[in-house]
Image (cartoon, rainbow, N blue to C red; front, side, top):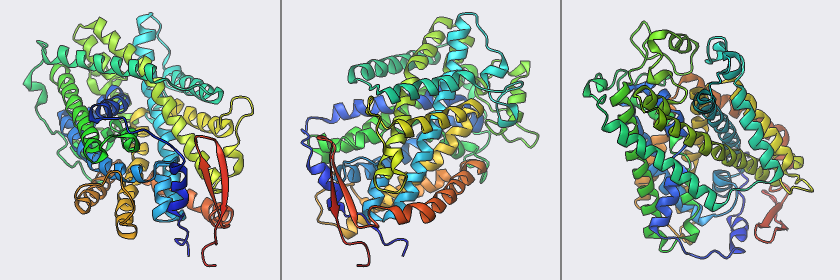
Length: 524
């Protein structure tokens, strides 16, 4: 049977048992870690996209997406604390629901990370072209700064060269083996939070701030309609992208003092802080500049990233519109006359976003690496460079794919497709938590989800709700990608799986040692 292969949890945990991790993190450290991981790409890049989908209802969208993330984060924390090894949701699924479903999760994560990296590259390009080059009096022609109009780019667009270049540069750094230091990350976090705090202070106290900009508050309603991707929930499905990153807090559960108390405080606290912060940023942007979407003939918001929206945004009357900006937060301050602060916001995004691209490409290559190590993908993908000691082959493949996506597609479409994969992975983690509660209730848990039979189903419901409020193209992309993945699994991976051949690989990630442990194949 296709669902008969479940990787022994004890074999997976053998990796974690070889580690010696000191419990040193308190609730404050966890909260700050979460804030640093979450604040970034979405709020700097997708504010304009969210406003086009929901208008002032973007504030409600941030709240909805934040609540879904909170319940998902609690599920993630329990299982991450139980299985603190490489592979994320792929590994969790392998240990609970079997190889086939784990494959589908890993395949979705590959899509999620790569497309998210493309989306961030496009977002970085907007700030680079607008703030950095614009500040120097350099203006790239449309054919070098945006994708084709037919793909939702811009009039006269051909290729987003800055997005292509930054993706390839980051890929090169990963091949060489560049790593980020904790001090460098701390500086980036401080830059991001300071920039956004300044934005909130300037906009909320501005003379241009008026309640009239919030009317109508929900121009497309709460639910814009199935497959439209508009309305407050449709925007929430996109703005979900702005919260991804909290899993770094979940995976720190093993190193947390009193995890049953401090993990939920760190997770919920950081997500609540970011949600309130995001709502204030959205409120400041909309209250000063206005955030009403550009409507079609039927009175519905034009699809974000569509050719028609690109055509409308090229018209003079929408030159200052929030929904048409590629650098929305810097754009708001510049229109209000705070040019220096607007440039500072743009520079903050310019400096901080490449590290996000690096982390996303790194995460994608490591999912590839773990799946290859399990025998589900060609072993060449887990081959390590003799000099740089990095999985250079899979990193180059990933980097080229990310660069191509960034060069030709708009940020909104890429974020929606990425979110489809993320939502599927989070849904599977919630199911895995419940499966383990039934199948292995005695297993030691450093953190247990409170009211798991309420929280886990709410996570599933929230993920399904957001998924079905994505644009139709984004919804269809995931099953289309999944069909390709299932074909690869059935015709290649299943027959080459280490687990199927009766071998489980245990890896000591500290010493770098590998032990092949034979087991009886299923059915023997």
